[in-house]
Length: 201
Image (cartoon, rainbow, N blue to C red; front, side, top):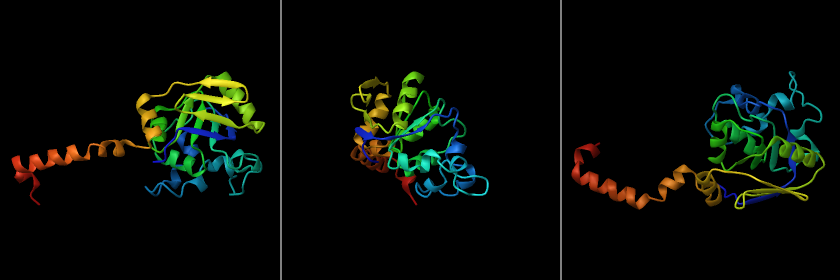
């Protein structure tokens, strides 16, 4: 997993509330457990009409926000059914950070496992960042200091210490477990001696 310490980027403004995981990545596209191939279907109902034609001026395909690594979203972002495909799809669109007033817990947990930082800020702060994004201003996110800066404004945010350590180190839960690899191997060796019948093929 790629480390996350600081990020400076323009942002894509998408302040709609209650965006669920089926809007982020429709269930009909959940045909693979690979982490790639979902970006083209991300926010499909926002980006395309019923006939499959690209919706003009949708923010996700707008030249104004091309290359944005930050998404400014609305309240209760990522609600609905649990699917890790949602952060996979978001990551493939280039987003490494999502800022919103609130997130669904499972969605936020899935994001940290995939190197995406979710920042919850008060509604008025998010509104100000939406305006800044629409104006094309860069936003600077510092996870180590837990701050967001834009022009002369500074926003501080709370973040789960364990999740922060995962992002800053670039270690997901499996990587963290493997830091104890020698202890695990030592335990397994002892168990094989004490209970060899459990290890027979």
